[in-house]
Length: 157
View 1 (cartoon, rainbow, N blue to C red):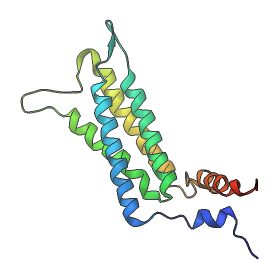
View 2 (tube, one colour; view 1 turned 120 degrees about the vertical axis):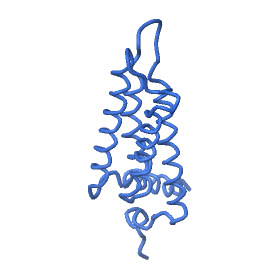
View 3 (spheres, helix red, strand yellow; view 1 turned 90 degrees about the vertical axis):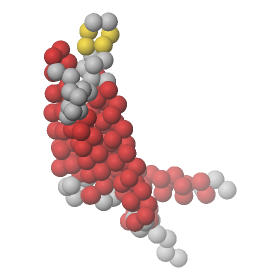
View 4 (spheres, helix red, strand yellow; view 1 turned 180 degrees about the vertical axis):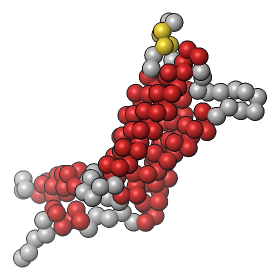
């Protein structure tokens, strides 16, 4: 009897195109949602002190979301939707309305607004570059762990 090892089960686990499209949609929505939250957090204060929480969250979300998406789907293109959703949403929210209203303010908060745009975009682009390299974040460890833990329950009689 030839028994297939976890590596062959990992290679066979390609997502169905419909599931992949749904994943792209969900990760795009996650990128949009993170951008909205981060833009709304730009004027965060404790008392009179500005707290630069939004740029930190932008970097974290633009590294984590594409990495998770790339790791789960095993396709290089899967890292793009969260970053694209974040970029489009952030730059739309950064523009002024015809009435002159803005969500990314200048003045005291300008350094937070600009660092959100710069560091978030830079983190997203670096993550996309990293995810486009062959073998990056393929989820092999996660999938092999799931295969191993699923088949390990038969041992104890």
